[in-house]
Length: 306
Image (cartoon, rainbow, N blue to C red; front, side, top):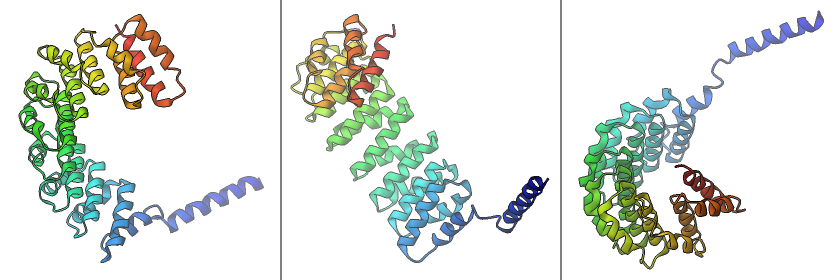
């Protein structure tokens, strides 16, 4: 009886505490909202980061206002927070920042947040951002257009195949592969002769994703490329189209001193699907190196699929 009475007293006390302090959980949020109006930039940054971490929809109006903050990093954080919230009402303001903000990091973050919204109506913003002077912004626009997988974006992406930045070209070729339409061939075929090895490798992979049979002769020529990753990428692309002539290059790359090349070769091996490839992958799937093990396991799963 005493125990029951004690429990009752405790329950009543807990309820009383809850009534006395109903907003304990809300206090950090309110503090951050208040601090977001501080005259000190460092305090506004801390507040913006706190609100981003909370990911609470009721903070969106304050984040929207902070998109106009005079501090670039506050604008970056609040743009990121609205993207995490998938706050569609921020679409127009984010599009404006993506194209007009003087800070490249803000423009890049605004683009990435727009991508979170998954709204096809924002595509023109990404297309305009392809002309941005900052490489990181162009790459964000390119990867987003590839993610939409909209064939109508191919013409504008083809223009970026000649971008002076090799990083940008690498991403353009990958994006065209994601979209997977043969209309990208005029940009991808010359990409096999790009001055940058990773760009050539990405172009080869993209041609394989498109299953571009018109590119088979060029891909066979790419098997002679001096770079191992280009050879393996070409072999993998050919395998996608039932041509396994690049197998010797893949097998040789399994012993390449470059670990990335070895991982790419392991992944490519999954496309051959024969008993020899399966046995090799079964062995690699037990490798003590986690990255090799996981890559081999994924490739093995593909190799076993008929």
